[in-house]
Length: 540
Image 1 (tube, rainbow, N blue to C red):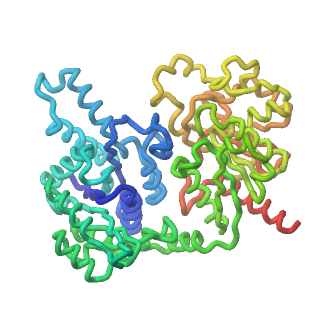
Image 2 (spheres, rainbow, N blue to C red):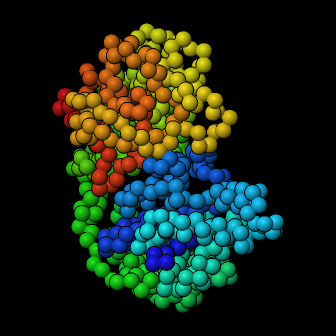
Image 3 (cartoon, rainbow, N blue to C red):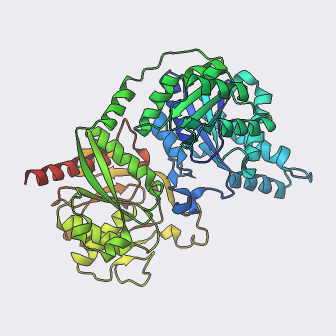
């Protein structure tokens, strides 16, 4: 196998930023001309995060091929600018499902099925399959969870076996740990890192590189101590401080020499990276010329990670417009109880993202109506588009009972309805949505076509209910433009209000395809409209 492997593990505490470290390293390797792909091995027993509560796991990221994946896959795509696939995310649930299914079919010929070798073999098989299919020069594999967790042990044992089988020059182990600062003594403490590395060593893994997350710089003495007690060269102890911008992390890790020591470990050619464009983008992110405020009205705003890709896409659109986009997180239920004039005071645009279920829908409709009435830029994504449709049906078409059959099955005006091929497919929740990339044809002369600069695009979906085409002519007569269509099934993908500065609803999830150095066209246009709205208000 020619592909080199980099394994990223985490210790001490969770949420240290293993995913960002892996993604940043991927960017640095790509800037050196190496082809890179990244995998996430998640230790939870769910088959995928598709049915998990956003409050527990954050957003569900969707790939072009329809995989519902961990949000770290989104970080990978944004940093390395590669469209990843279902091969790039594997869970314990998928591993055990595959092994048990094989056992039921007699695949083990009556033998006793065990964690070692059967579960570990399946994990290694998934890694090898991804490498064979994607053929990168370097595959980065992030192991979810923290060293010492029971559920992570099969994954750690698998990567230990891989290094033994492939050889030390074929694999590099990076361990991300925390070096806490104790204010009482005024010291950075290395003992948690030492214990974490010892835990790794106890299962046969010796890290080659230790990335130390810290609030304060690590002096030579601290790095030397960590290297001595953890059996790694001092230069392989890499400081990773808090960054001003998420996208500054690759630049900081480059300055600390992470890529150099990784290439040395893998016996790969040292090449000079070209980080000029990335550095320029980071500067635009950190030091913008202007700003605007976007109200994000959602169901899960208490946990911002539930809308991670939306928030990042807004940031990207700000970078593209040399502006800072400030997000005002507004719970949809609060809109139902409060005064919209006060809630949206000082806001330059309203975005209603995706979601499921009845909670908060009325608040979202109030937000959509407020944007429509006040000529405030509005962007509805998935459920946000459906909300705009229902609100328009109620207050312009006069259908007071208009609704989605997801909420009101008996409405006489089901403007949002179930797809025909989904009617008999409701027993299973996971994997039964319209998932992945679908073609969208754009109407000539529409705002959507102008923003994209083309007549056909491919966007990612994650939903079950659609606009009900029985009502198309009613909406057209009332002033709604349908400007994006799925050509194969005739499904509505984009709606616009032509007598409004910016009122766009899309059935897909454009946030999944936005990049820091290549903002999604609709997000870019939405933020430009918000900046124009703010400028007009300031002039007045």
